[in-house]
Image 1 (cartoon, rainbow, N blue to C red):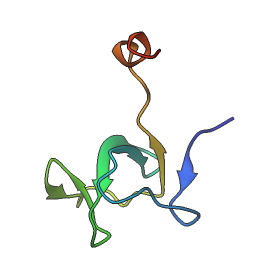
Image 2 (image 1 turned 180 degrees about the vertical axis):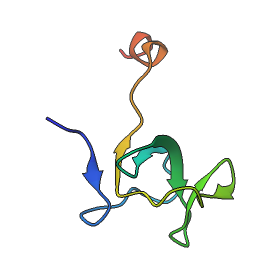
Image 3 (image 1 turned 120 degrees about the vertical axis):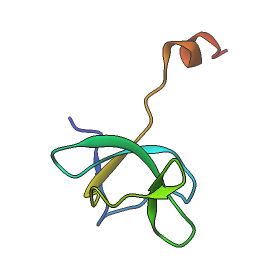
Image 4 (image 1 turned 90 degrees about the vertical axis):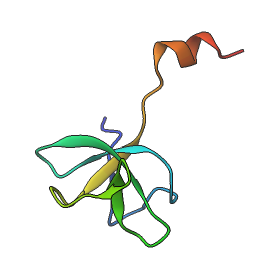
Length: 66
């Protein structure tokens, strides 16, 4: 089962860091309050995301859970 969410179905909250994909490439990005996709404060011009997923939890995140 895929955890990818099509951008046509739902978008992440503005400012939420997520993984995005255009079907060929995956990178971390976030949406601005204006609806633009950005990474490190710069607009994504290299790809137009078609799907996204929440950032996976790291091993340190799992160690800190109650």
